[in-house]
Length: 189
Image 1 (cartoon, rainbow, N blue to C red):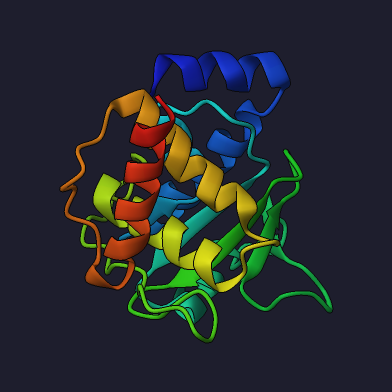
Image 2 (cartoon, helix red, strand yellow):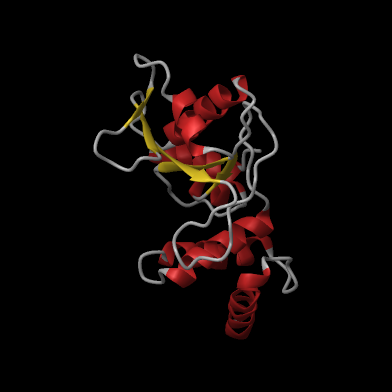
């Protein structure tokens, strides 16, 4: 899936390397039958909100296995950062960071919406479902409202641009937040 506006944004801002890096990682994982899901800014772009992102957020069943496979070729483009975050790698070619996120776990302590379990191993980018993306974004924002304000903005923009229904099947843990956001947008019209 490539949203036309997302493509134009990436080309116009020089961030097409982010998707190039995501595709490289997806292909390497697929070679080893490891499924993935794209969440974060790339997923937001693909659901119709063309905003800039400079990294790749990728959910995998086992972060350590994915790290090992993606960085096995020490002369290859993907490498682990020294002294940094354990589940973050970088692409030497594009300087894009990849954050590997653990399926079935939450973003941080206090969050209630776990990352979904990817099921498709493919060199094509597997974008997380819309309902789950909205749920993850609201959960992240709610548990760090100042640092994760962009997550709330992503939800607002996607609701407006895609004209999402009030009864969207979001995770029960964030349903109240979704309804408050949806109702607030409706009241502002």
